[in-house]
Length: 335
Image 1 (cartoon, one colour):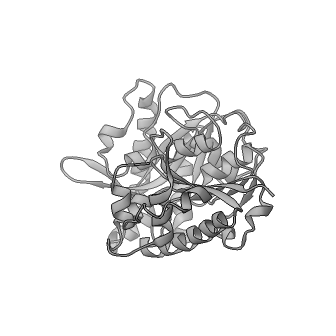
Image 2 (cartoon, rainbow, N blue to C red; image 1 turned 60 degrees about the vertical axis):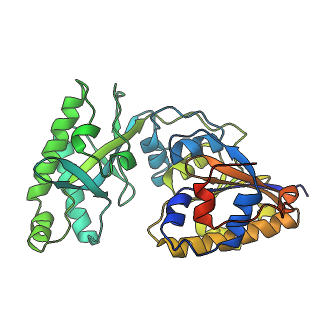
Image 3 (cartoon, rainbow, N blue to C red; image 1 turned 90 degrees about the horizontal axis):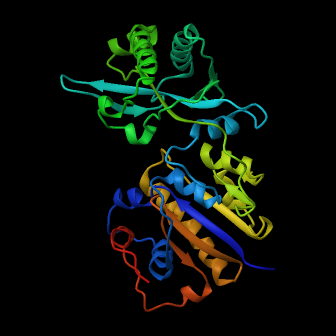
């Protein structure tokens, strides 16, 4: 049986390595990175990298909202709308600037989340816009006409001055006004009034981003099986008619039954760095042993597009001494 070609994408590998004690060692990850053949994909963001791993062209602005909706709702419900993400966020203001401090619902309970959702929905309905909520923290709206400008992606806007990240385009004035009205409504929303009195974090705004139409289906050169929890990878997998499994299922998987090509997408998670690296070390060890037994060939990528190809010929490069993971990732790629 031919070896399965496995791609392991660890979106925040550098961040995870930088968040733990530099003296901690991860033998399997370090061996793959030190002995593997350097391979790179030019990708300005992890989501651009995901498009490439599915064999798809990635524009500057990715249709994240459309992929989100096809994953969270139904492949038959997307239709030919221009989809836009509407994510709940927390803004922090001082005398000089307004900064997006975080996104998501933090510690709000389901009842509080529903209050925030209803508040945002009411403002949008006054503008004739229907809020689609198929996931508690990933909201979308469907527009009949595309926008002639782009909103800053959520991760790029995080921690930045909102004045620098909002689009400066004549048609964007309409959306700036809606954003302002949502912020006013949320300021007076009972859940935020209560939380403000208790000194708790508020959800005081939303962020529009990820606009676009659903892309054309992925070509046949994409993976056959995808292990992922993230909406972008799962949406691309749905387009490509891939087998889709939750990331946790990789622990009990038999790669030989997954077809010739497999993508394992380890996206950003709330779990602490040490626990994630422990799980990744165990997974990498299993994959390395599968390489030893000629059952798979492995490519490991971090979110910036730098990677290592690891097969049976590379595992014998014993003269390439492993370095601590943080040190190895900080160094320049070498053959």
